[in-house]
Each structure stands twice: as C-alpha cells, then as structure tokens.
Amino acid sequence: MSTPTILWFRQDLRLDDQPALHAAVESGAVIPVYILDDETPGAWRIGGAQRWWLHHSLTSLAQSLEAKGSRLILRRDPAANVLRDLLAETGAQQIHAITHHEPWWRQVEETLGDALCLHAGNHLAPVEHITTGAGQPYRIFSSFWRALQQFLPPEPPLPAPNRVPAPADWPRSDTLDDWNLLPTRPNWAAAFGEDWQPGEAEALDKAEDWAEHVGSYEEARNLPTEVEGTSRLSPHLHFGEISPRQLYAQVSGASQADKFLKELAWRDFTDGVIRALPDYATHNGRAKYDALRWRTGADAEADLKAWQQGRTGYPIVDAGMRQLWVSGWMHNRVRMITASFLVKHLLIDWREGERWFWDCLVDADYGNNAVNWQWIAGTGIDANMFSRIMAPLSQSEKFGAADYIRRWVPELASLSDAAIHDPDAAGCRPAGYPAKIIGHREGRERALAAARALG
Image (cartoon, rainbow, N blue to C red):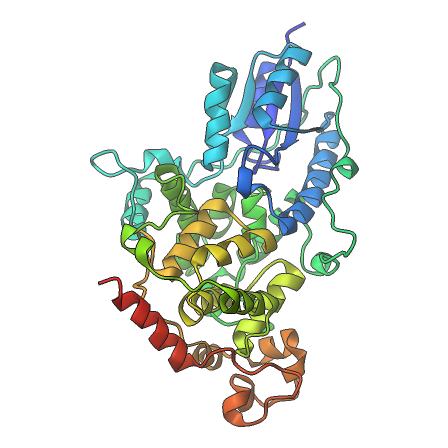
C-alpha cells in the first residue's frame, strides 16, 4: 500500500478550485490538516475577530471533507514542527499546499524544502510571474493591472473531487473546542452571526448573488447606506473559502464588472508588495516618512482610545468604529475616512490603526491591511500624498451616511439629515454624545505642519 500524502490547509479552506487537493488526491490517500500556529507569525498571529471566523470555517470544511469520505486533522504548534512530526508519524513523503506570500509562511515553506509541493491557487495569476521587464515586482498598481491582462482570463476553476481517499490509519487530532477560538467572557462577537456565515457554501452562494449586483458596484461601494453596495466577500476571499478565479468566472460576464475585477486584482497586487517587501506592515514604504513626528504620550493615547471606541465627536468616524467592533467589518468608504482621521486629524502613527484593524476585522489580511493603511497615510510606495486629508464631515454628507450613522450611533438617531453629520455646527449635539476631540481645520493644519517639517 502506498504511503499517504499530507494536504496542508492555510488560507484556502475550500474543496472547489483547490489545486493542492487535486494533486494530493491523484497521488492516493490524503491526510488533510490545519495547523493553528500562533508562534511562527509572531506579532501577526491571527487576530481576535478572525479566530471567531476560523472556528466556523473549519467546522464547515470538516463537514465537507467528511461528506467526501475524509476528515480534517487539527494540530497546534509551529507549523514546520507539526508537519515534520506528521511526516514521521504517517510515513508520508510529500506535503501539498497552496502558495502563500506572508513572510512567516514563506519562511515555513523554505524550511520544509523538497517535502513540500506548492501550487498556485489563491490569486488570479501567480503574483511572482507578474514582473517588470527587469524581472522585478511592480510597485504601482496601474502598471501591475496592465501586466496582469496577459494572464486574464484565469484558468477555469477546478471542480471538487468526488471522493478524498482516506489513509489506513488516521493520526491524532485536536478538537476545535481545544483551541478556544470563540470569545466567551465577554462574548464580544455575539452579533457576528447576524452578519456572517463562514464557509465555502456561503461564499459560493454569495458570489452567485453578487454577480447580479456587481454592475452597480462602482458607484454604490462608496455609499454607506442600509442597502449594501459592496460584495461582503472579503472575509471569504481571505480565508480562501472561494478562490479569486472562481469569483472572476462568476462575475466577469456581468455588465460593468470592471471596477470590481480591479479590486480583486488589488488583492494580488498587495501580495506582490509583501513578497517584495516582507516588512511592509511595520516599515514605511517611503523612507522620508521615518522622520515624521507622530504624536505620542498621554494625550495621543487618549485620542487613540477615543478613536477605537467610536467617541471622537465625528459621527461618520464613530459609526464606522462602532460597526467594526460590533460586526467585525466596516464599510469600504468609511474605512478610508476613519483611517485618514486617525493618521491626519489625530497625527497618530498608521501602524496603531493597522494593528487595531488586524485584531477587529474578520477580513484582516497582511498584505491588504498594510498596503491600504500606507496608501491612506501617504507613506507607501503607491499611495496618496500625505497632504491629501479627507474631510469627514463633508464626506459623510456627500455619501449619504445619515441612516448609517443612525444605526451605529443611536444617540444621534433623532437628528435630521441636515444636522446629523455635524451636530456641533447645527447646535443640537445631544448631551450624551462627545464633542469633537479636535476641530477639522486644527487637525488639518497640524498634519500639514508635520509634513512640512520633513522638508
């Protein structure tokens, strides 16, 4: 009897369009494994909100594997050690996995050497293949997007195998309950289930529905209204419950889908950035900004806390931060507004916001999170100028956020559409709602002065 093969799941928790799974099945018996590794990533261990998602996603994946005659083995410890142990325990000679670009996963991949067989599968095209004429990764998205065209459309998605052959003997496995991924005291994720249903089946259903609405994405994605204008597929994409090429195949035929497809490509671009610059989540893309004097000390810490808790006195900012805490997600336009407010109005280091989003977002992604924060901060390799400062009050009115604010900041629910964006200016701020922690003009001038000091 041939020895089994190990299938290593990471952020690719699906059976459809799973090239590593297909390769493993072709070789015979398969031992699927997911490893909870909180040590190798260091500071970038999976955040709190994503641990909730992971619990439910792994539950769904295990059920799907059981329906195929298999099971999911769960282990916890540094991934390289666990995989070596599994090779020795099972007699397996080969590990199949999908390529990842986070620096800690690349470290593990290098450590495993010839025992690991990697497959492309989490991108529209392998990002390492999309390079300049000099063979270097692209650092500007528009150039990356043009180069990507030669790889589009991507290869057709692979169907899930009918069966996943089981080994004669199964290695031991933890249980999900052993991992305590779900918060209990307090259960701050109590409302997550109202917004989210993790798992491959939900991702596929949501993609099918999104194909009917993607045509309105370019305009609707900017409107924080009760009628959602974004796909809400980002956490499913992050965890690999659906692949980018599955989503491309689903929506590319729809009218006016180009803007959404560019956003899908942006995810590939950000992985190319962290492949070229592994420490991009902690280091400015432009060295000039290393000298920027961010605010520190007790006052800055108090302002950061007010931002985190949604009590800045700016309704659109507070609505976004409260939505983030309650639901593990924030509307696309509001993410930009809240991030700009922290970095520019409060002059607080973008890395503080990045870390908060990392822990609170169900779709937190190393590459996407870092590149997006540096884009809004103006410190990145492809970014806005630091001097571009969003005006949260006018942004709120421009994009029709009145009902969005009423939902997430109930203290303001009785205010009119005209007053709700800036209750202080309207002279009707409720006693229980905080005053602005800084004026718009004051915050703007302070940020511009800090930028001018760089020379």
